Image (tube, rainbow, N blue to C red):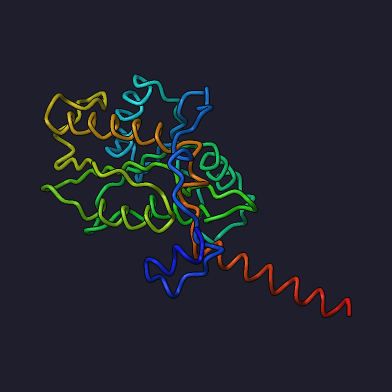
Amino acid sequence: MTELDLAEYGLRNIAGDDLKPIVEQRLVVPDLPAHPPRVLLLYGSLRERSYSRFLVLEAERLLRTFGAETRIFNPSGLPLPDDAEAGHPKVAELRDLCAWSEAQVWCSPERHGAMTGILKSQIDWVPLSVGAIRPTQGKALALMQVSGGSQSFNALNQMRVLGRWIRMVTIPNQSSVPRAYQEFDEEGRMKPSPLYDRVVDVMEELMKFTLLTRGQSGYLVDRYSERKAAREKQSTAETAALGVAR
């Protein structure tokens, strides 16, 4: 985009070198990854009869039916954030899975009107960047919650904020299962209902978004402000280097 273009549209505060045109061809990957979409699923309860885990297992069955490769992280033994080193085995496992994944599913019970600390701790252990790798940025995300009482969306709303904060592409659809103790049988399988149908909808939508976004995260989240900051930092470094050379 040239300075003439910027003047034509009245963009007086833009650094022309850093503003790039949207290239439609960049949004069509010519060489799509050949492997199945990789989906990591997280749940937020350590109870033996954990309905968030049961719901994640239902989601996993659907994702595998749609052709995904899945991993479920067991949060048991994960230390509190900042209460261990990043090399702790459970922390390392979680971070490796996040880097491996191309999409994620988060499912939390609602406890005291909020998502659980168990789910939040998992997210808190995943940094925005590990060296040159950003484990979550630009990846598709689906959200689900279970409640012991009536229909609620508090945990979902909180997780949606988190997903946006760590730059994930959070899909529009979501699942909330009220009175979860009534929705699963003794074997932990979800009973047929409109609530189950919604879970199917969410996983179907996640697969579509994953296929659209995987391999594209670098371009999808490439930002003008970050390009500008990087150029200015480079320019400052070069100026300093010239000063030393003189």
